[in-house]
Image (cartoon, rainbow, N blue to C red; front, side):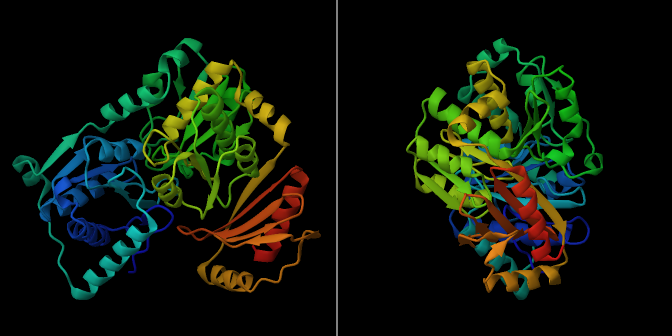
Length: 469
């Protein structure tokens, strides 16, 4: 099969595409790449989440690395992706591999590459990896393997507690004592994923739900979106808690529930945290957003006179800009947010702590903090629809939209188009509709934002009609 890297790594259905044989091919190409780039001597960090067979897949990657003469640091248990990324940075490793399919449904697993700077592999890197996999397969290149037991005995591989250094970094970045003293009633939903246990450990009194090991993730994708957080919202809505925090399957993305019991989207989180970093923590720098991210960030960056950059969807694009420029914060619609002074990586756990820090310093809830900003820049409503679509229909839709020619949508004249990633139609009042096929699933995503929820609904309905889904 052809190996393709999506928005963050290579993913596939377990036992169909994501097999030990295919994983070994990708791992071999990765080790070849490290040797070619002169990074092999720095070693490799390998981590994994709580998905089905993740530990065994990670061990296989470690065996291939050791078989290629590369020293491996393997996490001693499952760990969040940002903890593994931090370990790559802290240990000055040549690269890292994280076995996870992030927020994808339980039948998926995946292979994320982390470069030496501790962030997602850049597009140029994943392109080379794809080419090396294909070249190795065409040449019949064998996969080199050293059994893990032998590697551990010989010292070629070692087990590592990735959480220790990561927790130290979290404590450097946020004022944990301040948050603890504020004693904000908080409930955390790690969605059965790799972020379980950490926030209650850092914040005595925090309550956690869905922390048990469950590779089926309770029957739903471990993605912290509104439709998956009904229980968290109900708990906060009961009045027992002032805020709810949710993490995706590998804890690099965040979702939240505000003090009213309402879902607090990544757009709102981005907005509140950007203001917190600028006004309360006194940090400066540019701002990066993806094409599907709220206009609130545009307006807030303008208010603070901060440079604004827009990228295609995928944190790897944000990461590139964080490496090239002085960036205060970067984020995407899916809940992946990264900040200055950390690694160029999204980190759901750190973002959750920053939200609590903002609440502790201001004495206000998330909704109050957002309302303050909306009072200055206007109100915004946003919604995303995920629609099933087969690959043939997806390709036909893409081909049709590329020809352009859509003049009106839902009776509104199209003022501008943005085809940077997907097909975004922008209207005179700033409202917009984005039609974008997923890069990792047979899904079509429709996004819309406007200053009126009825307009959002109308645009999404029109988007479905255009797409025929």
